[in-house]
Length: 180
Image 1 (cartoon, rainbow, N blue to C red):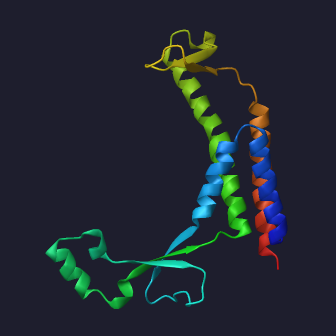
Image 2 (image 1 turned 60 degrees about the horizontal axis):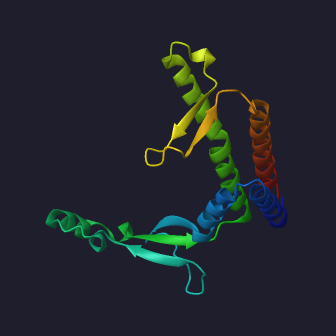
Image 3 (image 1 turned 90 degrees about the horizontal axis):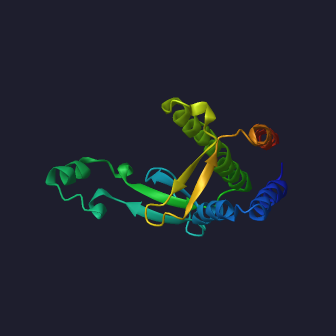
């Protein structure tokens, strides 16, 4: 897939999240992408040229208050190449799409798995667990506010379908990205 296609898929997923009251997830992914991709680079590695658009920050142990004389002595014994830099670069369209797919899997699919574990735990811990239909969680501060977790398996097929679709999307994106 070319960069334009990857960007279109990302925008489609972002718009779908916004339309389905999941804008918080799209915003979090956008925030991570906006901050950029951080990588550590050693001095001996090639640093960006002067006209590069990347920000580079030097890391040295003493800049973080190492303080210990033994630590400073060891630092002096290190070769110059041990100095590390943090490089910030923009995410590629492929990396942005991967971040969105990862966020979808974590927020939507993994949360369903967690819900199933909670349900299983409460059913196992109660004598009449099979008759429990839901659990209501209340705030200790305001007893009137809270939310209910239903024990019915509504949407299980939908979650399985979404999981398969995301897996297929990831496979196609990587397959197309590996082809010249």
